[in-house]
Image (cartoon, rainbow, N blue to C red):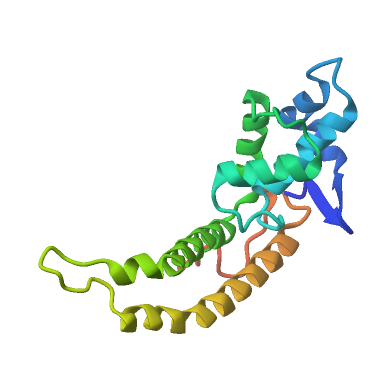
Length: 188
């Protein structure tokens, strides 16, 4: 479902998006709010949820939220309320394919590996109850050897997600057509 498109650092929201209840509510929920606020909230939703977002690498939801709020100019005290959460949930359910979901999980795993490697000083000092080393230098350097492979695989996975997104553009979830063998074979 193509509701948002980011081109040259500008988000465009399709007319179809404004017709969906969750997003229309953002636009029309308060007469004192400006369209600029509604647009920033839509921008927030895109950056917060979309797998193509520049913020997708921030796997901690609270940290990602803080960074996006700061960068797009929402008020410092702005919070995700029920209206925004409903829109986030809807967009997440309509835009996250199994491939995109797997990619996001891969980013989380890579972040966990990064945190592990950041704490090598602690890991090398860690001892068992009888004084034996828990993590050896060989274990840590073995992990380091995997990093280029992980990086390469993440880049390849991201390209696959983008290809899938491009393929799915303009198709709603219920109208996606199946490839030759995706809907099964009937054998008579």
